[in-house]
Length: 90
Image (cartoon, rainbow, N blue to C red; front, side, top):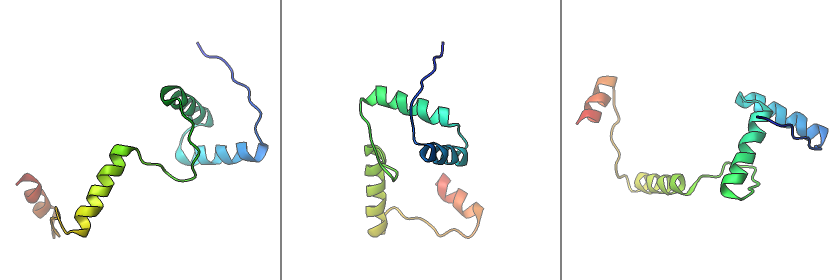
């Protein structure tokens, strides 16, 4: 069963939100529903104007950057798909 939620929002803000949702290929309704579900699950509201990585992803990214700077765990370059597949299978 579904119900209707009526909120007041600035007209320009709503238009911009519709534009962003459309650009992402989702409805504004889907965006709002997902945010409400997340609010219920984590009992937290986050306001950000940039992507925020979760802890697991941030740790992985930190490790990858560290490895890259130390020239560790680097393979390649590959000059053909066959070379790359051979490396993956070894």
